[in-house]
Length: 311
Image (cartoon, rainbow, N blue to C red; front, top):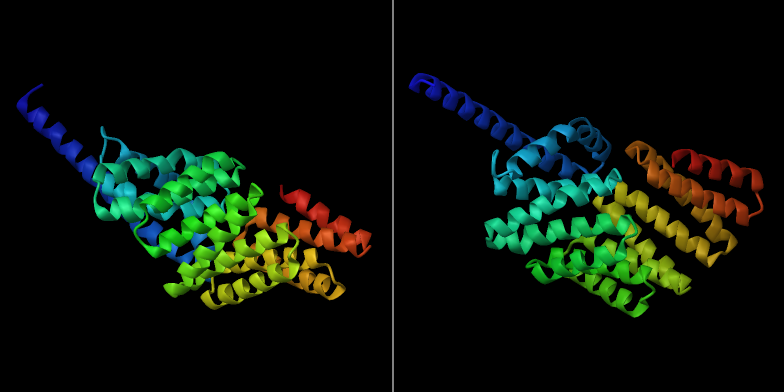
């Protein structure tokens, strides 16, 4: 090959490299924008935007992670920090378990304070959540513990405590669950973060429901719902309504059941906007349980069938 041909080839390779790098930076800017929107009333728009581009975003993530291609660990880290929320909301848990570790490797490669103390625990919490959603609790907890160990910010410590509370609750370890949830609530309040305070309250409420302390459970979920409504995060408002409904069903008074029906219906309205079939199915199932309890069998059957159609 002549020197001229070699020079031309290198020029084309450099052009391709720069083009792919520009694409990756563009996707990072978009994912950061959409992820911010997921916590607002614009969540449906953000999810739809992600849905249209996620295939291309995954290709970009793999390219910037590959030492033989773009080899850009900072871009890998920043993409990984922004993406896990989308994968969770769309139920793509296995996909993020496959992709998320690329972000952890990038953080270790970079080794700076932000990468190790903020990005690494954020990504760990995200991967732990994916394992938890798949029911792999033993795989989930070590990621949460590592996140807590590495976290240098109260916000991230609060996230880890909340996530650990969830795992301990599911394992029947009530004292550990309540300890972690209360720590999460305290940290959230100290930094004025209503979303994190609400999440800690939600897992306190779920733990109280497990041990049949229904009044405390309802109180926690009411407080959490108020905080969620103040922050305007539609997916979390819908989930808070579901949690409150479950606590009201547990308490079981007739007025509680009537309130729970309204809460599930309000949750469904939001879940339909968000196109979240998993949460819609949960709400329909909850309504079916209430109507069955009330002896309204046709309504119970209708709601159970609606739930099954979504699985």
